[in-house]
Amino acid sequence: MNDYRSKSWWLESLPHTITPNPSLEGTQKADVVVIGGGYTGLSVGYHLKQINPGIDVRIIESDVCGYGASGRNGGFSMTLFGLTKGITKFRFNDEKAKSAHQYMEEAVDYLHDVITQNNIDCDYERSGYLLVGTSPAQVKRINHDFKIMEKWGLGGVERWSRDRLSAEFETNFYKEGWFEPRCGIVNPARLARGIKDLAEKNSAVIYEQSPVIKFEKTAPSGFIVHTEKGSIESEYLVFATNAYSILFPELKNLQLPAFTHIVISEPLTQKQYDSIGWKCRAGVEDARDLIHYYRLTKDNRIVMGGGDVSFGYGDDLNRDLNDRIFRLLETHVLEVFPQLKGIRFTHRWGGPVSITLDMAPAIGYLGKDKKAIFSLGCMGHGVSLTTLNGKTIAELITGQETHRTDMFFVGRKMFPWPADPISFGLENAIRGFMKLEDKFYYK
Ligand SMILES: Cc1cc2nc3c(=O)[nH]c(=O)nc-3n(C[C@H](O)[C@H](O)[C@H](O)COP(=O)(O)OP(=O)(O)OC[C@H]3O[C@@H](n4cnc5c(N)ncnc54)[C@H](O)[C@@H]3O)c2cc1C
Image (tube, rainbow, N blue to C red; front, side, top):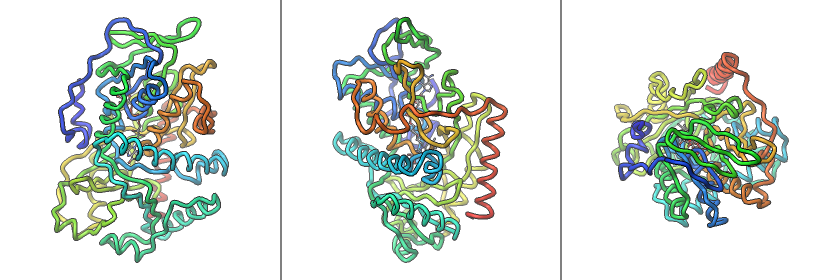
């Protein structure tokens, strides 16, 4: 078994050591098989059972539920769909970009409901999301997004002036802010384990430590999924593998994993906390290309992530650790809050986010009969999105037509990444361009 605890502070500090569920053994049959026990897969299982308790759904996870991005992320529940509003508008159109934003607002509100109505113990704080401009070019970018929201006739966002920001934070770094009160922060690994419990309470069956090795189509319809020790036959198959989808030849080039990294400090003393302000406790991001995202934990550690990304070559999914980026992140904490000089950082980790060529998420189908469904491309914004996507996928499987199943990104046209080494070169060229923009323009 891979040591899940080494994959993030969130996983290491779970209140109980995980005893994995039994792995898949023997030959089984089910109505729906879901590959992947992150938020997406667990949410599909939970919602299928909510819609129809009689459905036999089995979730197969290669390690333990929450081992992937769901147990390692920054924990921001936020409304951003894809990379930026501008890119989504450019790739699709204004109307679709607006509907994507509304879907994300629903996703954030829905995650709030799932957590609070089911008492999921995940340190949830509805403290908002704050996008800060720390340079004139970043302020311009934020103003551009305000104009888009105005054009769409959507509210839900407050403009925070420099004075307003100074009342909340003791830093000279912030020039202008975009504040969304509906957003929040969670302890991501606790959320993943909480949704696992919820799915199981609703009688979804979950196998852990069961990597899927391959699947086959059966005639006239249906699938057989194989693990090392067992197999399951089913009518429907869901790939809830997001960045790990690269491991399946059929999905390989539809997305690529990019690795984002996080450092976490020791808990702040009351004196240190008072010295930085951060009264609103909102999760904060800056408006560069290669953003920094940072937040407080329940016990007032500072989590700082982003700053740069790294890519794997081929199927390499082990780019979690990058000392250079970890050092950059630790330095950035002190750039924003120099008064924390001497603070210790206790853990460093990373994980894969799923990037499509057009930088937008997708729910899609393998095959014309629409019985194999995948979800990928959640970028670094999947915490709220995946939970709602799980509901949408459950609706697709049970034949319900809702505004969610009608969304433009369900069954949308996708452009594959080229094969390596071209895509590796392309990814690094895009990253290089972003780095240059950040250095000379967004600084
Ligand atoms: C460091 C980091 C920071 C992030 N910060 C944020 C944030 O603050 N806010 C936000 O909204 N999003 C954030 N994200 C993105 C977010 O975490 C993801 O979009 C989301 O967790 C994806 O959930 P998922 O269930 O689709 O995929 P995952 O959680 O990755 O789940 C996929 C699962 O599939 C399993 N699997 C893989 N291969 C197989 C196989 N062969 N057989 C069986 N199982 C398999 C994996 O073990 C994994 O558990 C961040 C991501 C990272 C890595």
